[in-house]
Structure formats: structure tokens, C-alpha cells
Image 1: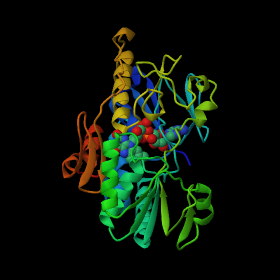
Image 2 (image 1 turned 180 degrees about the vertical axis):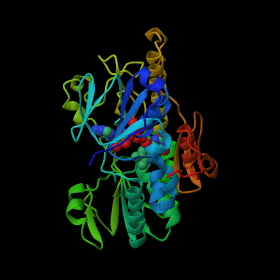
Image 3 (image 1 turned 60 degrees about the horizontal axis):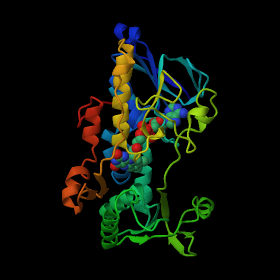
Image 4 (image 1 turned 90 degrees about the vertical axis):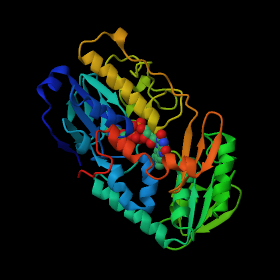
Length: 379
Ligand SMILES: Cc1cc2nc3c(=O)[nH]c(=O)nc-3n(C[C@H](O)[C@H](O)[C@H](O)COP(=O)(O)OP(=O)(O)OC[C@H]3O[C@@H](n4cnc5c(N)ncnc54)[C@H](O)[C@@H]3O)c2cc1C
């Protein structure tokens, strides 16, 4: 159901133009917050809140953690409009929402990243974390499918808080965490195995066998591509989510601006190919670099600068240029204290990288970026 929460933009914001931001995730929330006193901003998102994705796995074992990492859009967007709905079409002047609302824009920012069903309210999201915790508590054995950063971090959270559970992690690749170097992969594998996690590489779980049996209570059997059967009480699917561009493929305006992977082709200013007033940021873009939250935040900074410049009458020649990230530093948390980190010349595991990430999971930092106090929950 669509709802719209209005806040009258200031006179100067109205004069500069209307900016519509589609998607209130890592990138979209930051652009909306940054531009709210420069432009008449409308944020379109199917839920009333922004969830810090990398804090969600901790919230599954400690739902109270979600109080600070699930942030109502209204808390940081105090001078803009929030439309709780999904964008389904775009013309060169309007965004059309699922319920038929038309929102006029002068500038559009598409930050739709990944889409998957989520509760519409913060209270609903916190209840979902509670339900996940109950599922973990009730299970004696747990299967984690996927050995990328999400699967590894979830295994780390569960084994740290529930060392008595039998955890199996199945990964289709030959090593965990393929986005970082082999040395860091090996260290993470060793850490998990030392904690008792049964890691199975080079095999995939037959997902069709899950859907038929997952609704029933009690232990279930999952088959893998190497004809192994794994009996566990519950599972968590930690494989990648598709980019949220199915709806864009149906638009006349932007269907030809997508690459073969369904990502929006952008130029060095984060502007969509062939469009003067449409920008795209975050995971939905085709920039050749790792898809990560800190990268999405950098896109948001560049797009915000350029929109401010243009709305205040600046010349295109002065626009900020986005330089794709090549940073070698990558950190994967392993529970509340440890982490594995890859720096330019070395790889470290344990408490030292854990100090950087694992306690707070950058929640305070992300809240500060949105202009919020790190410790206080506004609503
Ligand atoms: C569990 C997990 C852990 C992660 N850990 C890290 C980490 O440690 N460090 C790191 O840097 N990155 C991490 N990432 C990756 C990071 O979260 C993503 O790169 C980042 O979220 C991308 O930001 P985005 O704004 O492009 O998209 P998203 O954050 O996915 O936001 C997209 C938003 O658009 C909305 N949307 C989708 N379709 C529509 C539509 N049609 N209309 C309106 N709204 C729409 C969605 O509901 C969502 O709110 C992690 C991701 C996950 C899932």
C-alpha cells in the first residue's frame, strides 16, 4: 500500500528544482539527505526505513542491534517528501509508482540497488529479526548456503553466539570469499573450521529440494551437487541477490541504457547514458569495480555534488568526476570480536581487524553520515 509523508520543502529548495530519488538504500538515502536543503527532494522507497545491510547479520542474533541500524527515512530526511512505494515506470518528466502516483522531477537519481521482500515498517523489520533469532535458537543444526561475505559473516555471528549449534556452510566455489585474495580466504576457512563449522566447498545445494520441504517443522534433508545429503533443522540462503532493474527493462526511456547484466550504464559524472538529468548510483550501475556500500556512498557524494552544481547554475565543465575504486582494503567480520582483513601488502585475522569492524559494524559511522547521532534512536 502506498503512503506519502509530506514535509514542506523550504522556499530555496523549491526554487532550485525537484529531485526524485528512487531507492532508499545506502546510496539513495545519502543523496536525499545531502540535497534536502538544496532541492525539493522526494524519496521513493517500498519501505519506511533504511536498513544498514552489513549490520543485518548481527541483528539476526541480537535483534536489539537493529534499533540503531534500521533508520526511519524521516529521521534523516527532515526537509523532503517520502513516498512509500515502488517505482514502476519513468518518463522524461515523471516517475510512476506501483499505485499510479505520478511524481514530477527535474532531476532523477536511480539508486534501486537490490530488491527483495522486506517489511514496510521499522517495527516489522525488528519483528523479523526476532523471528530469525527464534529460528536459530530453536535449531540444533543450521545450513548456510553461500560462502561469500554474507554467508561467512552469518556463520561467524551464529558460531560466536551459539557455539553449541552444528553449522554447515556449503559453497559452490573452490574457496570462500572469492572477492578477496586466496590468503584471506584460507584464513577465514581455518577460523570457521576451528570453531567447528563444517565447510563444504565445490558443491551446491539443490535449491528446488529446499522449497518443497522448508515449510515443514523438524529436520530436513538437503541434497548437494555431489550427491551428499545434509540433514539440518533450518537453512539460510546467502547467495547474491539480483540487481533491481527488471522494472527498468520495461521502460521506454531507459531500457536501452542497461548493459547485458541489467545494470545502468553511467558516465564519469554518474549520469545515465544518453540522459542529461538522470543519474544512477550504487549497485545498479555498470561501473567496473567491487559492489560495496562504501563505493555506493562515494557515488552518492559525486552525484550530489553534480546536482548541486547544476541546480545552482554551475557549468557542466565544473562537474565532479567519479574515479572507480581500486582500494585493496577489505574486511570481513567473524563474529563480535574477530575479522579477516586484506590490506595492500598483508592479510590479517583476529582481534586487530576485528577492532576496526566487528564490534559496531560501522553503524555509528553510517549514522553520522546521515547526520544522526551515533548512539540515539530517534523514532
Ligand atoms: C548482508 C550484507 C552485508 C554486506 N556487507 C557489506 C560490508 O561489510 N561492506 C560494504 O561496503 N558493503 C557490504 N554489503 C554491500 C552493500 O550493502 C551494497 O553494496 C549496498 O547496499 C548498495 O547500495 P545501493 O544503495 O546501491 O543499494 P541498496 O542498499 O540495495 O538499496 C536499494 C534500495 O532501493 C529500493 N528499491 C529497489 N527497487 C525499487 C523500486 N523499483 N522503486 C523504489 N525503490 C526500490 C530497495 O528497497 C532498497 O531500499 C553488504 C550487503 C549485504 C546484503
